[in-house]
Length: 264
Image 1 (tube, rainbow, N blue to C red):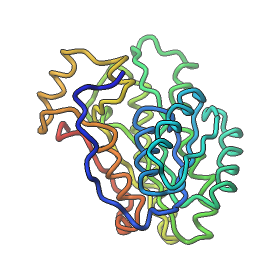
Image 2: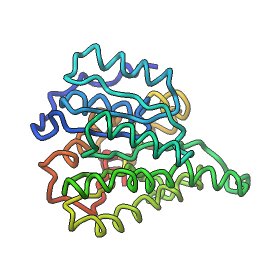
Image 3: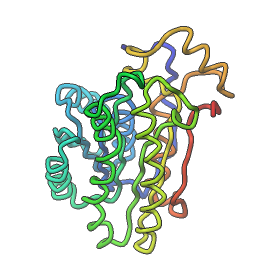
């Protein structure tokens, strides 16, 4: 579903330090993740991304390759709930890309559910899908970053838990834990010049959101609460992530950045 109200691609900043930089993104086949893959590719970075959806990933790569980036993104098919498989995929990406200088932990699932329907199995699934793999992806890339004495880890959170949205408690609670990972590990890795930050999206108009969750009433409520009275798009959300990945964001760590049009 193409959003007819989306603005044309802006003339965004180019970061020289991202040229050829090896970047790994989780959940890059669609949504915000695909936007991140595309924007890093436009910077000339070497991008690898992990996802379970091979068909959508292939479509994303084909679309990006059409714009002739310096490096065609590499896709690694993996279920991030399977931690040994995640570790193997990261190891392969490190080999293919010549290390990992930037990790963007993005993969998540915001499926709606009610608190009274949550079982122990579903609770574990929500935590495993939305939080656990963040830590283990960091654990997998950290030794190489420590050896290089540099690196940027960017964890994509969600403003939903801060806004007290109650239609997906397992998701929102898991996302609140992202900030704990960021602040704890920023202190751990700071002496090795590795930065760890969180970026929180508000309601970003991805194809998934527009197809599955959009309603006129919901959009009206969102725009009423935002200071900027329009939709927020993946390409513009990506810009703060690019800044934090580049040397330009070198003094930023243990921070939380909100991109929501001034809603929160």
